[in-house]
Image (cartoon, rainbow, N blue to C red; front, top):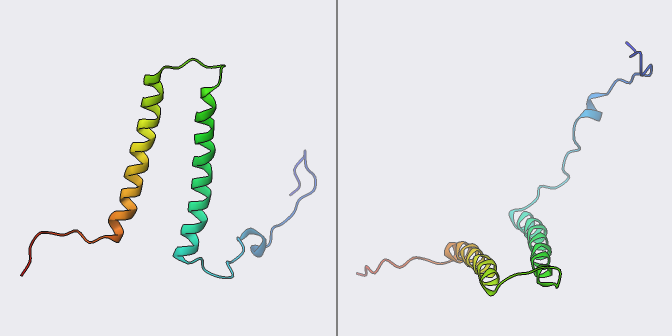
Length: 96
């Protein structure tokens, strides 16, 4: 039935409502590369934005700068540690 405001109606076919099937499944490596590039690019843009706060339009202290970059370094170190921990074997100190 046509709507009073929109007299033209269309009926969707089942094929038109379903998303197109992927031609090839994305490998774990391909997914990692795709997401890493997107996320790192976004982070770099945000870091540049933080750096822009150093302009004459803003007032900040040395303490402010140390807090900002301290937490950034801390989080980078934690994230890097998560990657490195997966590739290394923890030594328990027990030997035969």
